[in-house]
Length: 151
Image 1: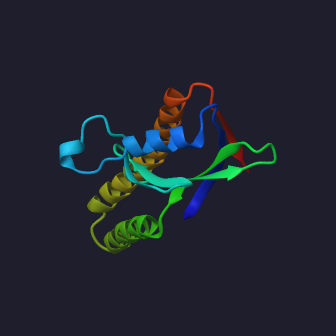
Image 2: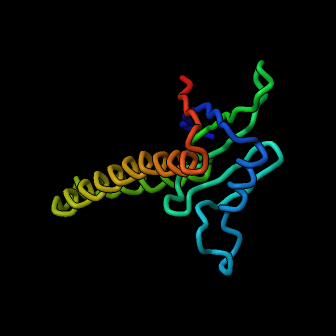
Image 3: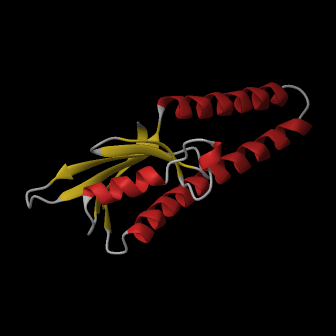
């Protein structure tokens, strides 16, 4: 994963309950669409999911056993390689169009720059909103969970 942020989440519920709840919220197919929050998969010790509404970020969690013999979740939020590659290709295409128009007609250059600025702003605000949605999902499941950002 690239451009990732790390968090540590301590739950008051057991690891099995948390993973079971996330597994129940994973979209499996169209007959099973209602009430689902995620796309992805779970394993016996973690998960790798993306939000249904905001498909751009990946949330990868692994349960680790700390020194008090209590499980806590190590959460990574970031981009997969193909997600970052698609963004770089799109921005490269916009830059190519801007440079091409600088030497010719200037009318479309302003439109390309405005489109690039709007896309970058909406993606940035979408990333923040995606984290908020994921954390609110965790807090709605376990109101006593504690989310700590690791630097």
